[in-house]
Image 1 (cartoon, chains in turn cyan, purple):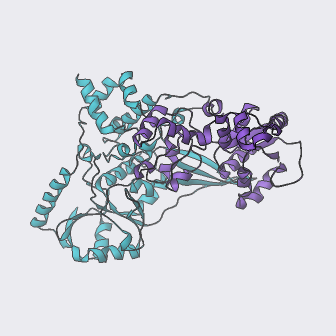
Image 2: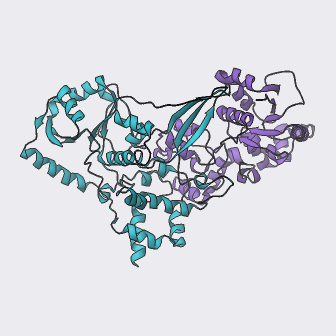
Image 3: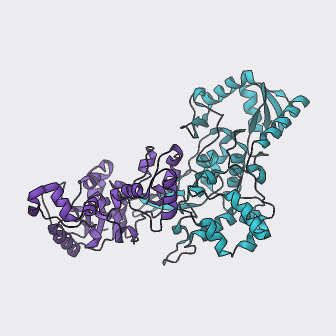
Length: 343
Length: 251
């Protein structure tokens, strides 16, 4: 990691240069409640002072909601080819927990099986991170995701009259050298940065007691009444899955054209909260009840990947809490599990 | 691959579902290449009583309609209900809330006895329906999907999950967050979240999902100031013939 500072006076020109040189994806105000990461053509559209985004920016770009995987032609000679589309992009203004979410997807899509569609996009993505305001439901410090150690090329932290710049890759360094001027960070910069981070961490209102969850979860796993109560209002609507920066499940659909010659295979985001998720040929459903599905989701988020990757499949962003019309709150439920077990 | 004979029939409805097929523009030539259209109420004058697949629009509201749909049921090997009126009874079911006699009187006054009008029912009250292309209007691409699935001998994938899934895939801000109420969380997707995409609440034109959380939704809507009567009024727009069809599973 290299540590530099970027003067606020040259920040605008730096961003303008990147917008003109690259396919530049950044936060733009969408409506009174949210921002969305979209293609930015002019710096006036960019608004890095954001709080809410429905869909995590990295997931949207690297693992889009609908994506063609295969094109095929039927006939005497059956012709099948994979479709991998990617282009060089800058993802600008993504915050720490969403970078950590992307790091999880990076690991998921390259473990056991290399997902070409994901990784070809990831390789061409330049990531420039920036802190954003946490929502009231954000508990990422409890998970350790409010700070990004890696996954980005450059991370800009806004101090009084300058940006504290963390450079994690040679590519990041190259870009800074090419498009702007940075100076080495000195002791005073580090001091101000550390003070900033202390203040920033104070902004997170929600916290969870996650430490003992791994064991507590097993002792409450078969308590049907507990899960029935938690899932009582669940709509099984899947919103929690689709807005999650680490949810990776997808369904592959066949799309054959009416000429019955050409066709595509398309993947689309799936959800473990809908009844069809556990439905198999023959009509058996492994998870017909919503409380079972919710419980399994919690296990996947908070336990499964501790065993597999040594990390949570949750970055504490709170999107699932905000998206849930039934007000199911993973943070409260983590604390509730602990309370229930310690009775 | 054989070219199935297809009939497109209209019962009580606005005809818009048939127009959705004609709206396929880019795919229309491929469509008439893949199937042989032998009957199409809104398209051709010729008609035929020989067909394997019947696409049926509209709900059944007259005695004559009952006879016609039963005849179609005897001829067609596969029946596809297209559009809300055929699938759930649709808007026409609002008539049932008055009762057929009262409704006739309101509309036709002292000439009410001239009119053949019975209780409104979706077509599956009279014939076995194999597939449902839901919605008002139905998603024309879903109609195509059903047709090509029938040709290649595959089960069409018709969603039985709530609109929320499509809405999130489309990256929409939840309309509840913008102060608008929505039936999306209990309603069937397949429309590509058409109404929320335009910042407007879902009206459940595709009917409700198999296992809707009615109580949770009642609680939520009451937080937004709606009474049970308000909710039913909104719900009845497309689902007043509730009961069998609404609860029935897609095969």
